[in-house]
Amino acid sequence: MATGKASIAALGRLRRVVVKIGSSVLANEEGLASDELARLAGEIGRLKDNGLDVTIVTSGAIAAGRTVLGGGRPRTIPERQAAAGVGQIRLMAEYDRAFSAQGITVAQILLDAEDLASRHRYLNAEHAIFALHRGGVLPIVNENDSVAVDELKFGDNDNLSALVASLVGADLLILLSDVPGLFEADPRVEPSAALIPVLSKIDAKVFARAGDDAGALGTGGMRSKLQAAKKAASAGIATIIADGRTPGTLARVLDLNHDEGTLVLPSADPVARRKHWIAFSVKPRGSVQCDAGATTAVRQRGRSLLPSGVTTVEGRFRSGDCISLLDASGKEFARGLAAYGAEEASRIAGKRSQQVGEILGYELGAELVHRNDLVLLDTDAPVRETEH
Image (cartoon, rainbow, N blue to C red; front, top):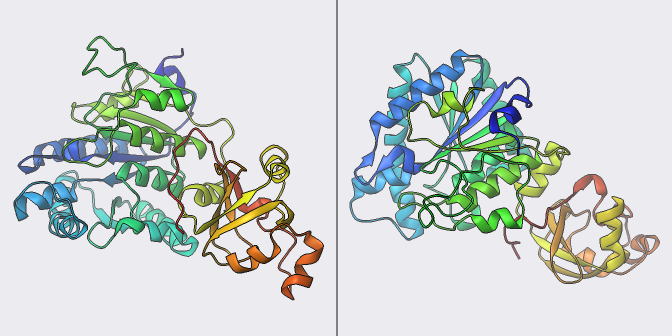
């Protein structure tokens, strides 16, 4: 197995880095840990001094707000929204204070899943972040928890950080939390378990090593970090999972003389950014089940999905919406943008392409999902539910 540093050296010159800072690093039971945030600001400031464009994805708003509101961890959506609303302003005030001491101006960017699901808003977010970098400003991204409900949430900020890394075309995603990386076994059960320095691929066996537990202050455990790293890898982005509570972690991550955390290597065959957006940023509005011939044509021969290969249509989707492609067993194997809405798709399912115009009275194309609007999914990776 290659060492982490030998592998990160192969990535070449780094220009853009996304640093995700977890609640377990920024907060404790009493609220925000100002000293920890100030320390990290100094470390991130040095990354910027070395010429890197850094974007932060932060957690901590709910953890900061709940101590002000009193009580335990908020459970309901309104309670989380209230805690986020109170905590977000305090969190950004701490960031502003910490980075001002470094001579760095920060900007707040709040996103929800709908912002990245809309291609127009996705590109607007991209342009805003690039404009901030050109002005020497440090973008700090967080989920807009004060208004987001479950159907508009990313799930956790690990997932959000992977999407932001793809959005900005990052070379490296650094996930800072309260764990040093991925171990061969749970170190709480087996203290002698070895840290895994490099992962070339995240598959079902790797996911099996990860527990599902999140810390008391956050929503994402090791499994969510591996899911984020897998999404980043598919976009050609490397990921390092490391302990953000240890001073000097960020410097050691980029120091070729030290191994730090677990490095997840990028895919050797990354998907294009637009297809990455289809796969991970857009929530499917429905699904179509494909027969064996269509599944093989799409998966193995890179073909478009034709109406003739569709057996059933589910959901309420319109032309241009994202849909899931399911095999005969009901397992999702691809996602794509539908050329026809659900009603039209149901009418032409199982029909030859030459019959589409005759059945509908018009034709938008021979394909139900064109291959340029379609991306295959790695079936080892857990995916989000389809919205029906």
